[in-house]
Image (cartoon, rainbow, N blue to C red):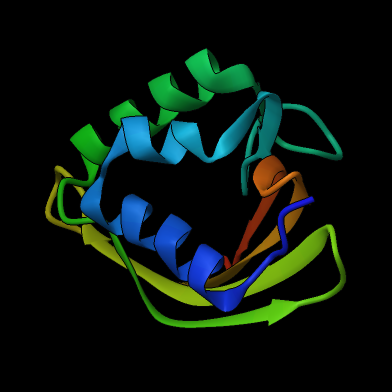
Length: 126
């Protein structure tokens, strides 16, 4: 069983910041899921199942927010299978509006690979 380490979490986050979809997908199990911060179905939002769907969603997101990046990242290891990452996600949308949100990921792992990524963002409104 592979241990969850801060270095592993940093390496995963580096893949997201490089927009390296193949690297990100290599970090998931074949049956991995990603619960996105929003979506059409309560209570989970949008659930992406498997590498193909996760890769498709990531590619589309990076196309819409080409400078998307996660900064000010902190990680906590909960136990042998769970970790938490907190970050600020920033970027510029196609319409030039800015993304600048505090968020977190709740991670679950099996044998060093992600089985579940559950993402939460603060929704800022006026």
